[in-house]
Image: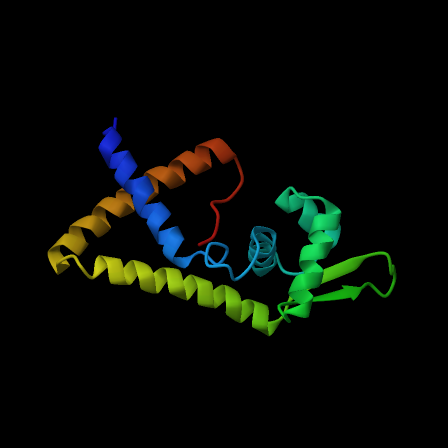
Length: 152
């Protein structure tokens, strides 16, 4: 079993990385908007009801988030021509760029943190992290059944 201190160090590292990079913490966007953009980035256009269900929020909250993101130019909302009750929401180029920018910020911040290690230390850590990630993927696969591992 891993030591309590090791677990605490890993969790603190994750918290600090998120603190430096997360757009919600940085005041750039609300949590609902962030997760909505991430979902659209992974799945493509969705109906507002589908977005709400996937995010575990009410349809009115999803609609509000979509309208705000539309005003910011990050999503489009369009009614289906064959059923105008259905509103499809999709990412715009600006929304895609924003998601990429957040991912780049996290990557760059992690690289800056790791730059404090010698090449040998980085190599050892990389090997250890690969083993830890493999254990995490195994746990996800065992608990998720046929569901796939979340994309990076």
